[in-house]
Length: 391
Ligand code: KIV
Ligand code: ZN
Image (cartoon, rainbow, N blue to C red):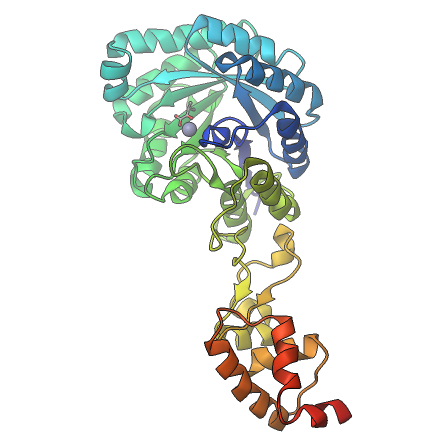
């Protein structure tokens, strides 16, 4: 069966960089942009040009560097923002302007002190103006998650009329349930005139831990671009994690979608972002966390040693992790101890293992983890040590 292509729009350098204390300089952004291009993302959102001279210069430098991906520059629906965004991507091989405005009643009333009709006009004007600079214009309806579907459809229709090539439907506050967000995308697919002239993009935040689930529901219901960040970094609880989306689409046979991503680079990118931003994903983070391929309970270790896929649905090599890890703790069994002992040079018989295992448990109960050096020590202080060495 032929698979539909889902475009990956990486916003680590824009939405991701909005994490307090994680600002990157131009040199760091260039290192990351180069790797993102090699990873195979379709779009790199390089920054918010009007926000500072530093961000503007970074976008210019990234535009010059990137070979394959589109380079996108963010703006509000404000003429000067759009002009500056256009200037920042002059050197890009495939430039995109990302412009838009808040569409929820809360944004319209409290942020803009405006009304629905005026916002529709501003959306039209922003996209039309951006089109005077570049062909590829993405429109975002900020807080679309809390915007009623009927009004949102009208805004999208107008953005398409003005020439938008991509319609971004952000769940800015991470508010929606997956079923609700999926239904929103379906509603737009079915009710926006000329919807086939634009790609629908999902952009989800993780305030309720639903960003990945919401993005997947969006794809199932017709979105063909996912906006995401490496390690899910971003404002507050973060954005959709790129590595999760990519591996879900790759891993699930009943989701018939492809991306351009070379998944073997995922772990490397995760480490690179952690290093430059100074924050690591939590150990239990899906795909890239330190424990994502680590097994510590006896039952699981026994299964994985016999056959990796008894407890792993992803081959670590597929995401660039060298191998699954067997971590020895007081919950580990004989199989794991024998396996680790063999790795450090001891091939134990069943009887030898019985004694070493009893010593191991006493030792492990006092520790959080038992490492290779500890194994040597446990074996060297066992009664059967001579036996083992003379075999
Ligand atoms: O979350 C959001 O709504 C955004 C837009 C600026 C695209 O990041
Ligand atoms: Zn966002």
